[in-house]
Image 1 (cartoon, rainbow, N blue to C red):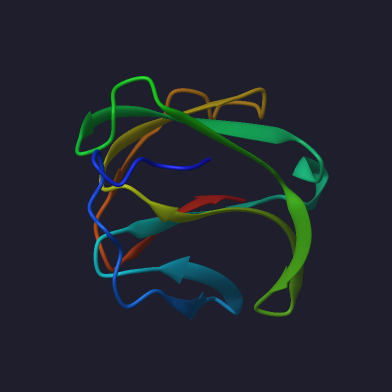
Image 2 (image 1 turned 90 degrees about the vertical axis):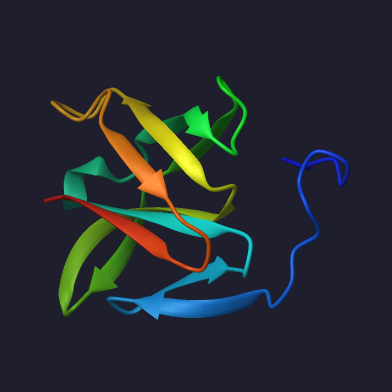
Length: 115
């Protein structure tokens, strides 16, 4: 998804950090979201939708869970890099995890543990 430079400010200091051994990209103006789930979530889709803050209301991003090793255990992980700061809501068919809200801050990676 591309963002208009007139809508969102130019990003500076884009970098990759590691959270629990998983690489995720952030910047001085944007954060990230890391969702760690059970191995059986592999291939399932999760969508996040903007609900407030700098992110446009209703703006969506979608990722599929992929298999990764997290702290020596096999897990499914969905990574949302370089998100515009604000409040997002999850939308997924993964049991009991629809409509969870999460706040994204610049320079930080938020984490949801669905294990």
